[in-house]
Structure formats: structure tokens, C-alpha cells
Amino acid sequence: MPAPYDLTRDELTRLLEGEPAYRARQVWEGLHARVRRPGEMTELPAALRASLEAALPPALREVSRRTADGGQTTKWLWALHDDARVETVLMHYPDRVTVCVSTQAGCAMGCQFCATGQAGFRRHLTEGEIVEQVAAAVREARPRRLSNVVFMGMGEPLANYDRVWGAVVRLNGEMGLSARHLTLSTVGLVPGIRRLAAETLPVNLAVSLHAANDTLRDELVPINRRYPLAVLAEACAAYVEASGRRLSIEWALIDGVNDRRSDASELVTFARPLGAHVNLIPLNPTPGYPVVGSPADRVRRFRDDLRVLGVNATIRATRGADIDAACGQLAASAPGEAADTATPAGAVQLLPGARGR
Ligand code: SAH
Ligand code: SF4
Image 1 (cartoon, rainbow, N blue to C red):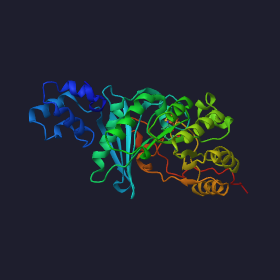
Image 2: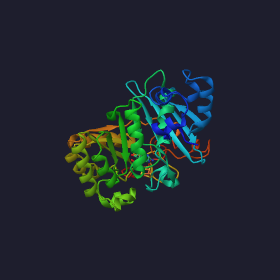
Image 3: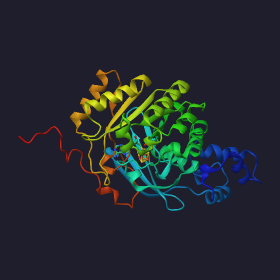
Image 4: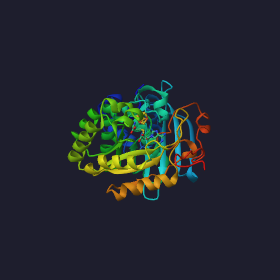
């Protein structure tokens, strides 16, 4: 059975064959512009409503939902039709409402520090499965209006390019989300970045860098062996040039690994020519990686070092750390399992600088 947001408009029209011609438009707008389930489309006759509800069951079944930050953050764990699991996080801020969506069940990129990478790849999500995560967030956010979508949940968006781009086009064209408020985050898949540069919708691009020398990056982010920093920088420059958007660089600060002064100056060498903005986030602990995030004072010093050297940097507030909803913390596990894995920030800090004297 098709998922509601996997249907094209033509497919929907065919599904409604025998109904008055305006029904297809009504249902299409009901799904996208108004973000309703078929069963809630009271403008339709009851029998049609019921048959559409049966013909277009949701793609996402809620397995669990948890909230944090005084109700400002909600994380869902969904089961898909084949029982693959993915997560979605909704975050309310004073000035915006953002949803973080998954693009794959698992991920094949194998970044060591990432819970999703540790779990391995299961499959790509369909366009409809991606869009439906946003639809769920739109509904949950009401009466506030969902303003931003970040493709920073489970999976590598540019490894699932066609479906992700299909979702971007649908969110923008049919659901009214501005391209400026859509952000794709990539580990640095150069062919995908180049394709993106040729698109006409200027979405934001975030590159998860974490290291700005090839030796360290090869280790932390294995895809760097295929697309090393020099090649990545060229593709990023082409994107900035073509889209006119500012590039973001994501940097998860790992205690004693990539939070030294030398790391900051290498990052400056990469970021400054691109005019990129750096988002710093202390690494969230994951069960499969025996290193912890940098302590808060080192995070601030790293930010200050970047600023002094002419690179804009902000420390990203971690949202939902107590429900493992922070970015990169998403690992679809059985309900309940994920709850106990978070180490309280700063619990095990062995500062290389601390001397035993
Ligand atoms: N695959 C894409 C998008 C999903 S990961 C990418 O890598 O960009 C979203 C972000 O979470 C990335 O910046 C990723 O590097 C970061 N991340 C992964 N694991 C993390 C962890 N344990 N702590 C902090 N950030 C993490
Ligand atoms: Fe995949 Fe991104 Fe995690 Fe790397 S950080 S394993 S690319 S989800």
C-alpha cells in the first residue's frame, strides 16, 4: 500500500478515479498544505474519507515518544512497514520551531563516534517516509508553526540523494517551507555536494567536519579516505558560489582528540576561505566509542580561538540530552534501551592537562 506522501499528484488522481475532478486537489491540499490525515478531511464525504484512510495508511507507526527540556523537545521512535526503526526530534525555540528528520534507517558511513554509524546501515527511507516525519512535527507543533527542517537525524542525506531531494521539493513547493529554512547535513559526500550545487533551490548546507587534517579525519570519518579535505573544500566552495548560501561546519568536540589549539588553527585554514560558520557541540557519549565530549571551558576556549582567528563560531545548545535526542545520539533501539546510555556530561573527564603533582 502506498504511503500518503509517496504518492505523486498523478497517482493520487488515479486513486480517486470516478470521483469529481476537484477531489484530487482537495485531498492533495489536505495532505500537504493543511497537513491532515484523510480521516480528518471533513470536507470529504464520510465514505470517501473512510476508504482513503484505509487506502493510505501512515508510513510511520509511533513506537514511543519522549519529551525533555520542559516539554520543548519531543523525540519519536517510529517503526516503518518492514519494522525498520527511525527517530525524529522536534525542538521548540523562542524564535523558531525545528524538526530534525532521519533520511536512512541506520547509516553506512561508519563514523566511530556516532550511534547511528555504530549500528550500521539498514535501508534508505522513501520520500514519503521523510516527508511524513515533518508532517508529524507540523501537527505536534500546533498552534505554533513549524519553521525549520534539518536533515540531521539518522542517516547520510546525500547517500539517499533522490529521495531526500524529492522530499525537499515537496516540503518547499507543497508544504510552504522556505528553502532558507531547510538544512542538509552531510559527512562530506562530494558528488552529492556537486549535484546540490546544480539545483535551483538554495537550501543550507552543513558539513560535519570534526577534523581539518586528513590523518585525523580519515580516522574519525572514514569517508574522508575517498573524499579528502582538499576535494571537499573545492566542492563546498562550488556550493557556496552557486547557492549564495553560507556554509556551516559542524564540529563535535572530543576530549583531547580535536579540541586543541592546533585543531582550531587547522579548522580556521579550512573554514575561513569558505566564509563558513562553525557550530560547536561537545561530543555526546555513545556506547561504542570510549571517548567523551570536551569540558565546557575547553569548548568556550575553542570558540574564542576561532573567533580571534576570524572564524564565526557558536556553541550549539544540546537539546534533549536526557532523552538521547541530541544530534548524533539517535540510535533506534528497542523502547527503553536507549534511556540508560547517556553518561551525564562531564562525568568522566580525564584532562590531559591535569598533572598528578
Ligand atoms: N550523516 C549526516 C547527518 C546526520 S548526523 C552527517 O554526518 O552530517 C548529524 C550530526 O550529528 C553530524 O554533524 C554528526 O557528525 C553529529 N554527530 C554524530 N554523532 C555525534 C555524537 N556522538 N555527538 C555529537 N554529534 C554527533
Ligand atoms: Fe552517518 Fe552522519 Fe553518523 Fe557519520 S555522523 S555515521 S555520516 S549519521
